[in-house]
Image 1 (spheres, one colour):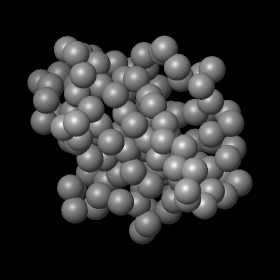
Image 2: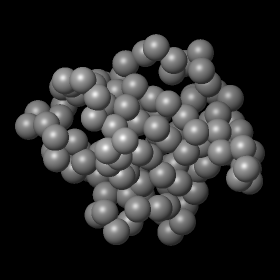
Image 3: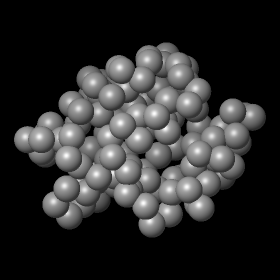
Length: 119
């Protein structure tokens, strides 16, 4: 997977809810998955890009999201849960375990690693 495929997959998910997904803003929340094994790349992303000081209380546009998540392309988060919040805002709850495309979850959706969550 590369950043263009990642963006395409994200747009597929957004098209389920929005006619013009380019105007959507994103909040990022992370799942530390403390009971899972992490490697040095996971730790690097957790301590730099996805550190609370960088993401808490901020809204991002789609290009910023693609850049943030593509830091270790072709490695991407194992999964990303998508929550449609108030109008024009989407929460992305992400795994901080970055893996190669063959290990990424939710391939059956047609837009891995994303899955829409209704919680």
